[in-house]
Length: 498
Ligand code: C2E
Ligand code: CA
Ligand code: CA
Image (cartoon, rainbow, N blue to C red):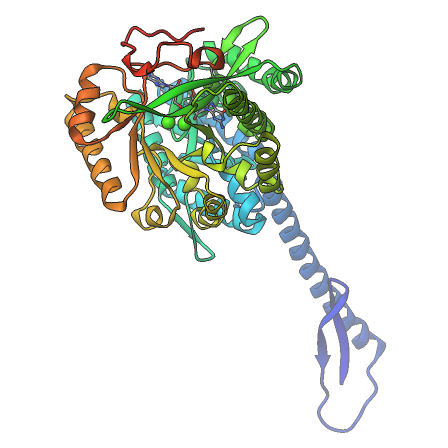
């Protein structure tokens, strides 16, 4: 037998074997050379295939995101240049959507990167499912995605697809037996009016996405020119916020909460304000998204807590009968290492009773990681601190979880109060929430009550806890008890003292 090895990728992958049947014989050098040539030719062609595969793979890797397999920014730019040329010739619309998940960081922080990764893969699958042939979805990095829609005839088509995206994303996902809830904010730039290169369109869609975040997330915004200025401002916002914390530029306002059955002041909600040295009073909607995104919210809310508890201590010293003060907290805060120590220490230092404060957490935040939330809130609730679900009705919570959360109060979101008593949908939603709360033995509070008609509807419907401009606006601590007692007799003309 004459065996010559075939070498492939540095190892012997096989042999070229010549067999002579009969009496043994020597192989001539010509025969040996011939066999060696065949073996080396095979090795060579295998090697060429291997390199080609490597090159193709490298090319693919260079143009795709390793985790989701979606095109990356560089492939996107390649493809979209072509699409933009096509849109220019055909006069059709092209839209660039910029997506940023709303609560990815929280999920990543509490469940770990593997779950975060699995979530991103699952989201990319959902996105591909919504799109038409010819549309391109790509991952820009982190929890940011971009979608390019082509061959559109009307702007309404863009709106329709974007809404479809919101809907599929907010369906719960099951990863490692956990139910996860995510939402996304979408900004949109349209060719040709919002830019004629992908770069500009993406940048403008990004600015629009920030507006969607500011407007409460889980929403869609089309780009408008004034957003560029705001996006620039955003870059300096975080630095400004840090400086503001150091310089003590924040202030806590308090808004009264009443029981309208017996006309009793039952609570004060602490609402942060930014007293900017040049810009004046800035409302939280303008700076909280940046504070949350940068993690500064943890320090800011601790400042609010310290200030509010200090205020309670002061009121007690002055023998002012202050009711419970509600603090708005993020789950990020409560899940922070050392939060319980911070809280108990603060309570001790200020000598506040635990029933002197309550926490408000939005429904959306509670539902991001419900199992973990239940665990964390139990501990706090067991300390004797009351918990309210804020913005109820907007955060798709499930009844199964609602029963398990240790909550004392549901705050019906202002969105549903606005239409009372005429809007039929609002009426039935509010009645349903009131009935639900009653059945579960939970208090229900309506926020954003601005008119007497709303007030009377609520009184009638059995919602006796109320908060809103009609009764009292948020005001600085010095003015909360300055009005004649009881403050409830204030009319709708009471003005925010700022
Ligand atoms: P929220 O917790 O839902 O607070 C109620 C918001 O509605 C407040 O806005 C309040 O001023 C406003 N409001 C109250 N009554 C009425 C009314 O009758 N009509 C209208 N149109 N608005 C009314 P604000 O103070 O601008 O706060 C906005 C949001 O920012 C709050 O919504 C809360 O989610 C957040 N926030 C405020 N302070 C803090 C804080 O210290 N920490 C954290 N994490 N979030 C805060
Ligand atoms: Ca609140
Ligand atoms: Ca609210």
